[in-house]
Image (cartoon, rainbow, N blue to C red; front, side):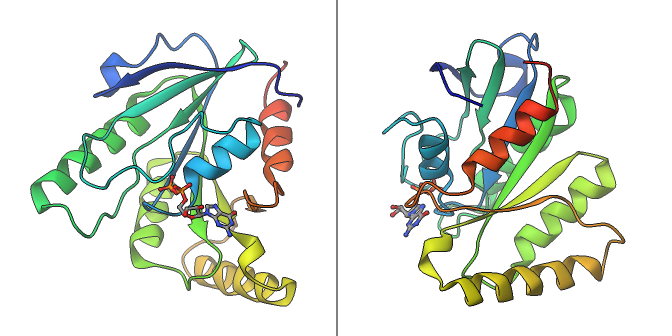
Length: 197
Ligand code: GDP
């Protein structure tokens, strides 16, 4: 898919404030610092569409971008901040889970994980919840340029094996590097394929 236009639409504090669900929507989520903003910017061919490295603990918002005037890309707040209070963390969780469960036009959720790390409990629990809730999702490994290719393959295998302990089928997996602008094209292809753009 060629990105012709990508515009910021609005930030919402709750799912009810999101734009009218008139177009297919694809959301991106992951732990803070996973490289979500960088990947969105790389995919959209934009330097700073999504803000990189937002200060943890600030008001967390759902950000909508309209792409090619026919689909929404949603940047969801990062989960798992170690530094914020428990009650604030609960607020993030509520915001995210309500959005995911209520957003009618959500086609797929891309869950980002840093390729360098072993599977983290918080990500696995989140994916478990998505599976149980019947929410379609894919896994996107980020920062692949930080490992040699053997390391990338090894870590993907470790992740797959971990998932197969709980599931019979694996979700789609994407290996990406925002730095090298790699992998985002396959995500865009998937988005194209699941629609009639
Ligand atoms: P976010 O909090 O998930 O939006 O993460 P950011 O996009 O702000 O990235 C967090 C840090 O990781 C920043 O210092 C980025 O420069 C770095 N980063 C993000 N993506 C990549 C990547 O693909 N390769 C490398 N080497 N660094 C990356």
